[in-house]
Amino acid sequence: MKPETIKVLIVDDSAGMRMMLEQIFGADPAFEVAGLASDGIEAVEAVERLAPDVITMDIQMPRMDGLEATRRIMETRPTPIVILSGNLDQQEVASSFRAMEAGALVALPKPRGVAHPEYEADVANLVRKVKLMAEVKLVRRWPRMDKGTLPPPPVRLEVSKQSPAADLKAVAIGASTGGPVVINTILSGLPSSFPLPILIVQHMASGFIRGFADWLNRSSRLPVQVASHGELLLPGHVYIATEGFNLEVTAGGRIALTGTVLEHGQCPSVSALFRSMAEIYGRNAVGILLTGMGDDGARELKLMKDKGAVTIAQDRESSVIFGMPGEAVKFGAATYVLPPDRIVELLLSKYTRSITKGTGR
Image (cartoon, rainbow, N blue to C red; front, side):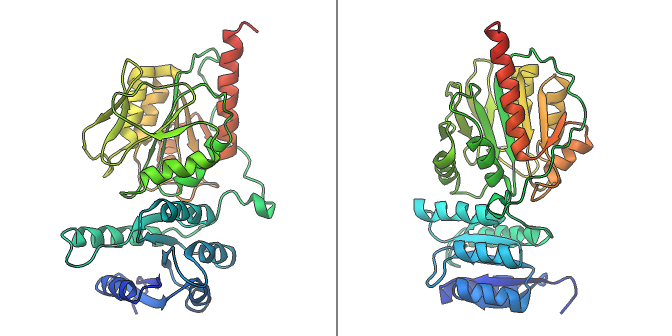
């Protein structure tokens, strides 16, 4: 075995799917199939015995499902886990997001059969994603409040030069790997009285966006929905970018779903959203760039900052991957570098200050 080979553990209760995945990874010289498991109990044991670099995890399995297996693995031997969902119904998609809460990195649909016209594309996407996730060396659940672990202290990059009297109009959030859990943390920390519309671009596999919105609605006091073209932005509403279209804002305070052009390999892209926020709202906007691989949105967050907006990057300690926020810090795009709970505190302080000024108190 070559030292650089990625050891993958395949976990699925279907013998046919295990065979397909074994053939897929076995055909790529970058991988070694370290082992196969047919349920969560076998998976937990195999992780201890084989020490894989990455795991593909089924959700619905007998004896122990993928959600519980993920929890146990993350508590005993944290390993990058890619959830593979064979059924994009509401229950399984919800379980996929709960597995991400437990520490899984990303959820993908299972590749379709070899006779399907999209099989090769499915395989290429799966192999690429598993390779990328195997590079994540430190994987942990955030926050681990159930274990009594406190979140890291805030890190202020510099004092904000924005006037405290700014009349904020909207919040834009961009995220990739690790983002769903952090977005859930931020939204669940905001009260129902939060007055600003929130627009979100989360890089996500096809078929999961509506389930993502449903999952967020479980804990958010603000209504969360998938964005529609031409929709008027409403105070305290959350809009999730739909797959295949860039999410932008217009001068009339409406949503624009624009084209299918890839930026940084992504559509929807964080860059497109942040650029429109800078153009339409300028200093009256908040831009937040969260955990994720790559640099989507980093330069455009700097554009927002140059226009006077409040700009925030998630800190390294709480990020699953510090790629996107790290690039923003490198470009000088972030006025604040904060963990998720401190991002909530900052949002609350900014809008409270604005309301207090507006009422003359």
